Image 1 (cartoon, rainbow, N blue to C red):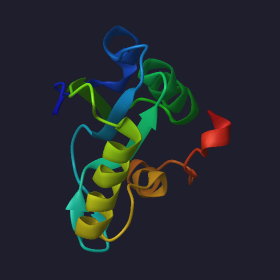
Image 2: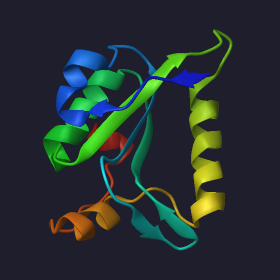
Image 3: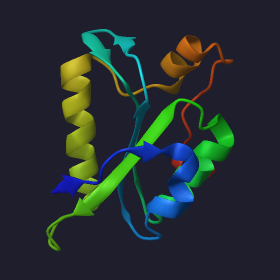
Image 4: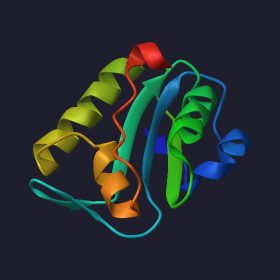
Length: 121
């Protein structure tokens, strides 16, 4: 499996597919403190329409300083929900918590934000 190169979240409608997939967001520059280290990651997701989900995130939280990427090469037999769960679990094991929007908000000087629930998409 392979992710595409990072692109500005503001350009998500030009790059992300209108198809199921896994996508990630990170800071374009800098790192965030997590319990077990530092990383630029702020969000992982699995969606039935990557473009719509990433665009909704951008509308809700802004695009300044955020880059996005999505899966571009995958085995047809891959269960995207299982892959996403594995990716998320690996992140938690490594950094001590899931990617969190409020960490990004504190760094960016924005009000605290809470992660979107599946029902809000």
